[in-house]
Length: 314
Length: 274
Image 1 (cartoon, rainbow over the protein chains, first blue to last red):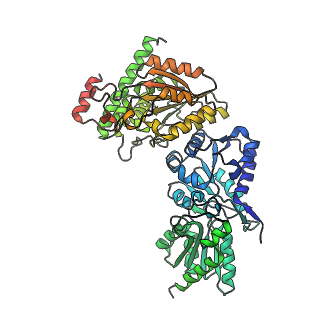
Image 2 (tube, rainbow over the protein chains, first blue to last red):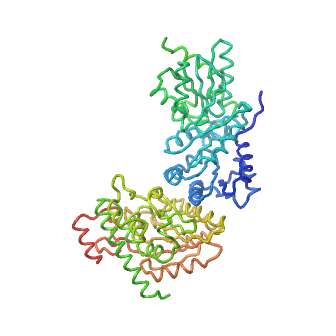
Image 3 (spheres, chains in turn yellow, purple):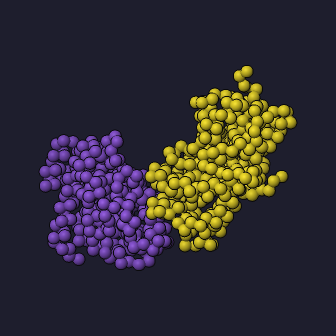
């Protein structure tokens, strides 16, 4: 098994690097800096770190003001609070004026684990994706996180980066170059296209191995930029394989599955199977138990691929 | 403080022009918020024509003072003030709320020169002003941040999150004004959801509190100068105002919060504002 690193750890390290490089970069947190990993930046650059306490609305609003005055604010807290608690602040104070705020939310998805449903953001991609001008990035592993966070500083406008609590295998090739709006074909195949994001990318790769044992050639595509979605590349992979699976650690409503379905519906109608959280709230448990319980496993992704293939119009 | 009579006369003339614009704009738009625009006229006139460092020809000038209209529904007052101050033509004012106009129902910073923040969803502006003040301090800048809050707006929890944070970060480069006109859409603020007592609350949150007649230029300006001298904490100037000020039939009437005057009412209002 590849080395496992949590994307939040990669975020914390990158913030420190960027803190040295960009004097106008500031970081804001809401009493979770040890968990979101902004604490390292806070220690090295105390004058550019603002702990806003347990007050997420003000956290986001303050970041908007800093951005309006020329700073590049990185805002961190858990995804459920960042996107849910402060949704109106993101909508009206950040997205509507298209301010240069980077929301790097950690502890997204079911793998928050034991804290349970109140802390498991399963709709954050949907919320952020519906905001005009918002860029939505879900890195698959630590190296991609580092590049995505760096890319966010070069992108003018609001960015949402979805990060996780638990360690994920490093799956990016050593020469991988992240670019906002690009997808990455990690494994080529002709029989089915599996679009995945976040922690489900490595799961999709394992699923492709399982499918290969049955002589099914699955293409695995890392869709780390959910918005703006690369419509052309998604449609091209669908046209080639004529069967599609999406997998995400998110509600199947509103996230990657929906985004891909929109492209297929308009450009290339082929069978689609969505693997994700099936429109329910989560619960407490270990991340591994929860992933198994909610069907976010390689076996389930492989089965979904076989179902999609069986539905192909011959 | 006694304001130079000449200065005061000039400010009063500007305030009258701004009030006339507010009536004409909301009349032309057939919608909008005259009541809370009219109550804020002296505060905004004092800021834009006496207090703030700005240059209408350079709305993006780095060294300018910033103003955040947290009570974004007073957009007519802001637009009228900006136009009177020369940021854009007063001719444009009557395009308020029309399709394609820069003058949106609530301020859009991306469209209108001089508008520092897009507001409208209440409770958010003070946080933004805090962020600007923090940025100014990081840059060791001499510009200041001014924010105008509504009294009903103080029913929003975010105002108090921001109040706490401004004091925590000792934002003495920030001055807030409270347009204390005592009315919100559904009636008296105390009847709808009592946010009082204001001086005690703001003081308890760590702010320096001043209380003035919000229609007196000399009081507003004197308190502002005193607030500018305060160190180590933010200041709020609680401005006692009259909703609908200057138009007899709009004064102290909650109904005029978000209702436009018809032809007859506009004519009557303009006749009073002569």
